[in-house]
Image (cartoon, rainbow, N blue to C red; front, side, top):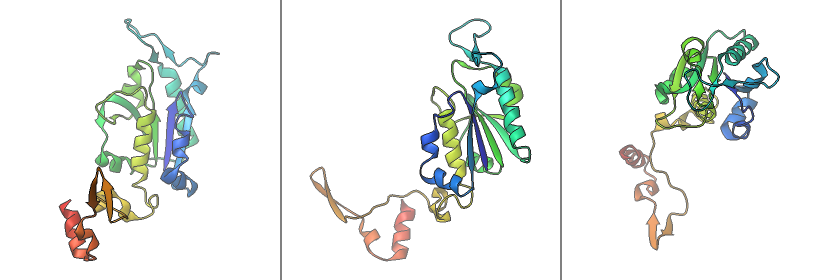
Length: 212
């Protein structure tokens, strides 16, 4: 699966994508993550990607033309991919959750538009992006962190990315886990591992976990 991130900060996520599961998935050819500098798609010598808003107001608004050119370039580079989706991160977008991650995992390419400044010209949402997504009811400075969230959540659903299929939380559920030592002092009290987990009785352990 191919992930393309359009941003004015193309190196902002480099270290995250070069660690752990995502690094291994890229090395094994299961996913490809590529960032594209929006400033490379501007025509002026200052590589300007924003301008003042019509009607006045604070801040600057990201321009349509560089984004359109960037999307066209990314699609040309992946001309053999038929099932792609252009996603704009927005406060007004559909809330991202595990169900949405499953839906997006069916595509072969996801192209992310990461906004900055006061916002993006509304014509991008209306005519360029296929959909708008929000990762939560809070405000961030840009779309780069949401892109990382979606990439990780979707990548985990691609066969082979996780070491074991059973590692998916939705299969095994989310329950309390413990490891050695069996007893440890915390805040002047001895805290022990639940006796069910020490029993060696698999049915009893499963019953305890289901109860969690």
